[in-house]
Length: 169
Image 1: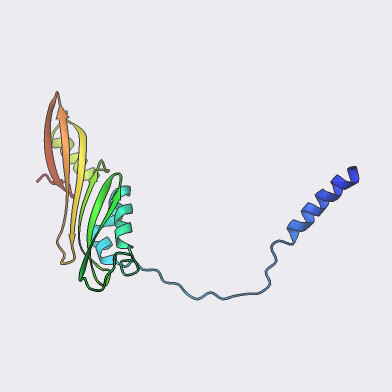
Image 2: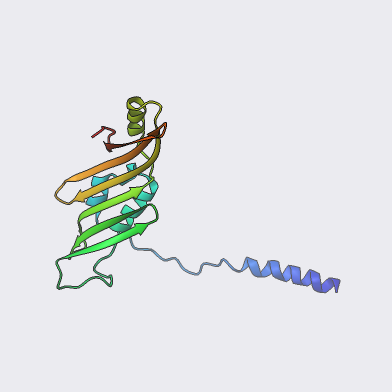
């Protein structure tokens, strides 16, 4: 019995030594990956936004309209909605799959440091109880980003609107 167990252990180690044999060399061709809607991503500044916002914007930018079930050659534009628990995007695409415009709304996302500093200076002793981030993109270059922030102090509530740079509107 002892010889059988030792033999199985040796056999187990011997099999593993033969598992990683490479028989030939192959050369892979170069692969270049680009976002379909890089203009949309670069103009909105996805790298500067909160994680849920950037995830949904990446999803909208990489959506393959032409190979989707929604594509129909008879239409010039297509409205597609994207949802996550923190927000949503309504994106309008042309028949080539390029984003023409978006309307975006997110709840409870990270507020930029500049905006927090300005609100702290302007409204001391007030606390932020809720916020909504709104973004609109148009391929003609018109982009708006605003925060609607609810402040509370001693049972009083006020709404403050700011742009993405922290300026109160």
